[in-house]
Length: 253
Figure 1 (tube, rainbow, N blue to C red):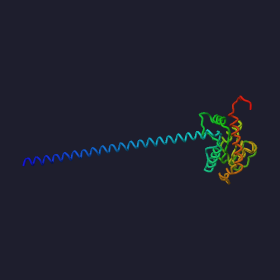
Figure 2: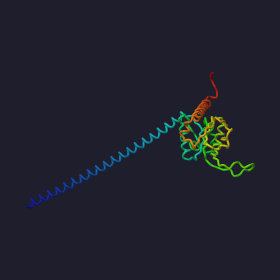
Figure 3: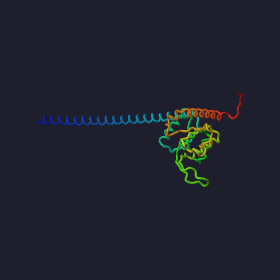
């Protein structure tokens, strides 16, 4: 009887131990599997993040490189404009920049694409001296009315549009430097003021955008714009070739 009791108890203990061992082994295996799976997932995530970051960096480098290549084939010009634009004027300026870039010219303007830690006049002079053409756009900025004068009869009190003060300064400095000049004016802007008044600048430099009756696309499809822009672009290229020639010639041509 005692042997049977001991044998049965021993068997039960063995079974319990086996069950414990098997369950503990299974738990250890599960824990290992979970650790391995989590570590593998983490490694995969790290690899994906590294690859994505590398691909993003590569795309940025390629886009920057392509931008440098595009600029290398473009001649820099000074685009004189203002930053205070309504929606229609912004569409006009965007289309104008596209026209300039399609002609393989690179528009530079203050203070958007160029900025120097100097006075404004010095910045303008530096940009003028490092460009090969000037395209000035005089868009409506302020509508004013004359209420008094210091001497003489009072002019008609009809309100009129004026543009930015720099639309007077920048083209004047470019003309003094001898840059090829093209002046584009929104209708009735500075009609009797400064260089934009009639008879001040050569008439073949003026192009008028009738913003109230003419869409942006209609303006850039007019023969007046196409002819003036083609003539100005040719002058810019000619200025570029002249300015980049060597100062001394070592052979007879």
